[in-house]
Image 1: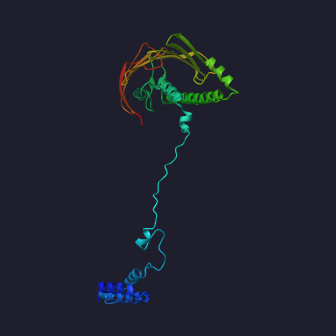
Image 2 (image 1 turned 180 degrees about the vertical axis):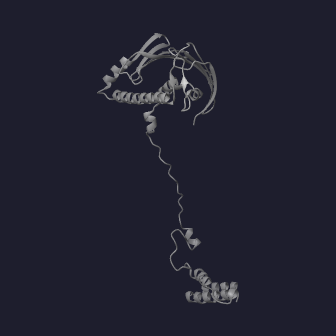
Image 3 (image 1 turned 45 degrees about the horizontal axis):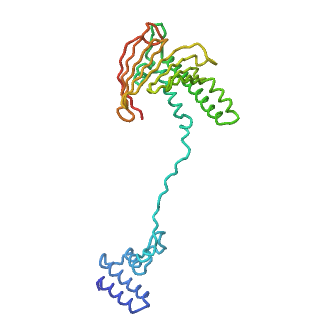
Length: 311
């Protein structure tokens, strides 16, 4: 009897004989013997499990189906499938801690002071930064080594800590009704605003953290200007002026920016032209010279072309 005939025989008996389970057992044995004999002339264990699974509707291992598996397509039609929608990670309502500590006002102030202290452009800072193999002897006999450079950077770091403390203390006493009077008094002492002419306003700001006085003139031409009087940062209050910086800047359209800085006591003049090439990349051209034969900086005429990439 062929396999096809066995199947046809079983289907015919199923329609006319309700008691079909015993018959299924008999047919399963015959089917197993037939398949086993056709392959290796002896019954084969795996085929017995296959036939039992087919005829009796139970898994060949004798247990229940794993969760999520079906042994009949008919039952699958009754299952309601629900699409799983992943929930996006909720965004924090509060800004990151870094933005709270270093807000835009502080970042702009720190960047400006860092440039005034160590160089107006990245290429200028790289050229002037000493290393452990170099010594720079200035015209007045001052020797600047890596240790001196580290001392300067340490002073700048101490200024940042003092300025951060001052800034956030100011914000606290400004929002606290009990201390707002103290803040208003501090603002009147450290900041002065005078309207000289329509569209022009003179602003004088004294920084307790850096021990500096900045004078700016607000104007309708958007001309960047500042006179910065730098005093001893370790002094408890206003002291003798160590350096006076004159800064001017002006944007030319949206592509170019020109600025200049003159160190009055040191006698160094810098002229910088900058152009953004693409986001994060800027090209700069710096020209520098001196107006005094003696100063704390090296006496030289130089032109620097640099490309700065930030990420």
